[in-house]
Length: 272
Ligand code: URA
Image (cartoon, rainbow, N blue to C red):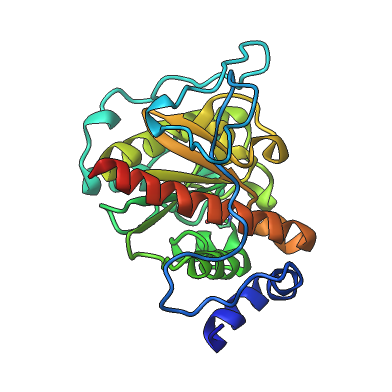
């Protein structure tokens, strides 16, 4: 293992766990991480996991079961033409948005950052204090962990990666965004997805997962499954801020990242 990768995994709190499992060291040039990769499992209604030797064809994605009684209601777009906006107009619209109460206390809206033609889209919850200050997502402590998580699977912010949030304005005191705030902001995320056309979306935490999947989500139950949004596979994992408080779950996040990476590899292979 190179020093740099070692440092990244240590920063994620993973290096000792990884060694305990007896995994072979990975050279930096080696493309795949060697931590165990869970086999992709298609989301409900398939009940049994796919046999390990026969991965589920990606074409067999099924949308997650809608649970109308619990599903957070997604409102239609607050303004009609978001779906037709290009990047500049979309970002301008986000910066001047007053579709929900979050606009009242923001310093600035945080549209998103990165490669606008990325294969990877990571979606967080919403800006925190530093993001509100700087106008860029994930620049605080959680962002540093996210950068390390990306690096652990050979990714970097801005390089084939776009990072956005489920809500673009900071919720006061970093509280969880309300359902109506997620709904009001969703058309912006939806338009970003339409413009980027990522191959894979990684939902970081529950609000992002719920916004994308339009249903109640428990991360612990949703991990290791493939969901979809508009035909694009969605993988769910823990939010970096949660991981900073729950160190034991970092190993699970590492598994999720390996799962996402294996899924991306298959998506690319299937596209050829
Ligand atoms: N947490 C998020 O979900 N998004 C950010 O941009 C920063 C912290």
